[in-house]
Amino acid sequence: MEQTYVMIKPDGVARGLMGEILSRIEKKGLKIAAMKLAVMEESKAKEHYAEHAARPFFPGLVEFITSAPSLSLIVEGKDAIKIMRALNGATKPAEAAFGTIRGDFAMDTGRNIVHASDSPEAAAREIKIHFGNDKILSYKRSVDAYLYE
Ligand code: IDP
Image (cartoon, rainbow, N blue to C red; front, side, top):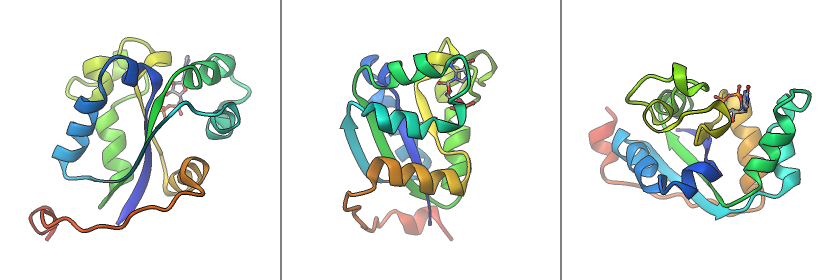
């Protein structure tokens, strides 16, 4: 099964949207393999968003991501990376379809509530940054027989 890194950013936590977002992830059939509520260290935020280091929004992004608790997740399932990106919706809330998390709940690109890895390479990299030293549970769900052929 594929794993992806998902973050409910500080705006999603502060706005009381953790339950709503976790519910969408669970109802789709994806499995939550790990979950951690923490204020992200600045070094981890900079590493996570390293590809954007030269962009004008980078300092504000790092400041925001480290300003308050965020929820880090490892989400698992067949095609988990693609499915989580679809659940989140487009980066810019004005372009995000209704029915997606960003389309339903966000107003601005810098406050778009959620993150999900965009490739297998990014997922491996991001899981290592945020869960590197943690023991990740492996557990079975009986419902899987009804989600997968
Ligand atoms: P993604 O989160 O949908 O993968 P990316 O283009 O990788 O989108 O951008 C990473 C994050 O950087 C976005 O989710 C958003 O929080 C922030 N960001 C991207 N572009 C802008 C911008 O123009 N202004 C403010 N923040 C931005």
